[in-house]
Length: 355
Image (cartoon, rainbow, N blue to C red; front, top):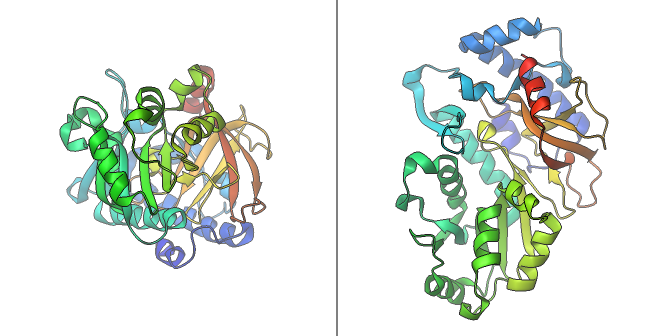
């Protein structure tokens, strides 16, 4: 399965529909067979689909599994002795959490592909990095889980780190001003979770305590939209507020799941999420049929990265719609789409029944 190595030599958004479909068809067949042979729970699921890997080559026909299965089962396609890292999804007390098992090769490919995607946003040079959070080392790792993993993951593309919050979640204005004084005249990288950014940079933040602005920053943020939607804050309003208060104009949302770490979707300049050469998306209607572009439905995500666990083809619990493919005005190849939040409980139960 050397398709990741081949794709890594290309720009991350360079393949058109025809070029991509050829690669994904054979890659999905190889991945599906690999997980079928090496993960017994996955094998049982695929048998229920009555799917013949050799005879089905259309991407839409490959069997998907509901994302919530990662909460119920330990899905591994490598021996436990080969597992070097266990990722756990975020959740509140009492929630079942997704468990993702990585071996050395899978973890390496996640980092390589994430690096490739990030270079398209911030360039190849590591930038001074402002993190709108506290240092994960200060927190209880058992409750920080996916949040800490994201911070550590994206910190690979930064240097000279500055954490905005102290261990009591108070804003460190002196540290921030020192960071902006030293690095704010040139391009710098900002990372954080959407709700935490809103809470600290927009609600709590005192402009009177700021001696510099954020105009040269590039902000990447994701997650936490549910809290903002309750107070009628959408993506456009969020961006306008950041610009009005901090002169921050380079703001990019991202969409991704711990079940497919590495193959994230970053918002393009036109305001859509874009699939990279390593990922694809399908939309399913309430009957699990493929929805046409412009129609909302359940998001199915496909990634070429998961090899140590069967996360290559999953049905999420999110609602989205594909706007188009290869035709976005920003010039990016691939599908471009919108995410409209979580599905209703009835729709989620339907996902579980798909197995």
